[in-house]
Length: 345
Image (cartoon, rainbow, N blue to C red):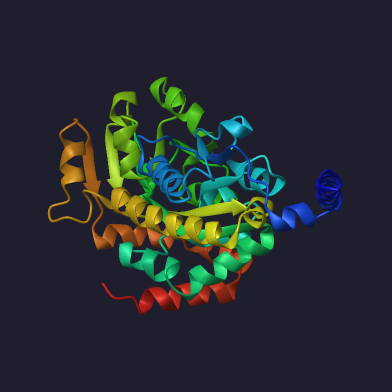
């Protein structure tokens, strides 16, 4: 009798497990490993942000969620612009991604690439930490992913191998490597440059061989990638756009985790985003901006634009700004402009 009872119980359990959806509702199936996509490795604040997130999640879930980093967008053969699509399709489980790289799929993210919209770090914070940031997270969710936190790659400054850039005329004819964004192409074309779309993996060899003259990137990338050693001897601080990062999870992966683990992953993303932002701004918010001196000591001529010089670049790119304001959404851009105007230093 006892044996028959045990067999009946086992059969019942097997039958329940075969009911579609019931087993997953009772105990979500966790993968042995989750894949996180990153453009840059852990030598950069971007990659370090991802590493911090992965470590916090692994520790706090006691290994239930084990995340492996895939820098260089290696899950997509290095194509940065396909990252968000890969995330939606399930090729990628998690990502710390760039608003620039994801803007082809989520047009509202072009907001951060509007030329000269954000004059300082307080302006970035006014957008990401306020109503605009919340609205953008809703846009990302509608596009098919789950956004959790903001991070930062930093202001994109311009360097080249030819001469100092102080006016729009100094960009005339320069071949500048840019990411695959139509807005970037429009901006540099308006300034008289020759923008050349290229992945980051291809950019450094191109700079070293002088196949391209210059590039634009945050200073943390300039130093970590040792761009002074690939002919980038002239650097201009113009702060024309900034690149916030977004911590995101694939929708199906998110749904497969328990509510308690989702809370852990979200809180870890927020912490990692804050730490990554501090790393991206290190040396630029302290008195004297020690990072600028560090770069100058490498033999790089650093030019900081005066307000009058910056105004010339703003004027030259204004038609691009107005064109893209319509494409991104005048209401969203208007909210951003008001939030920046009301920011606290």
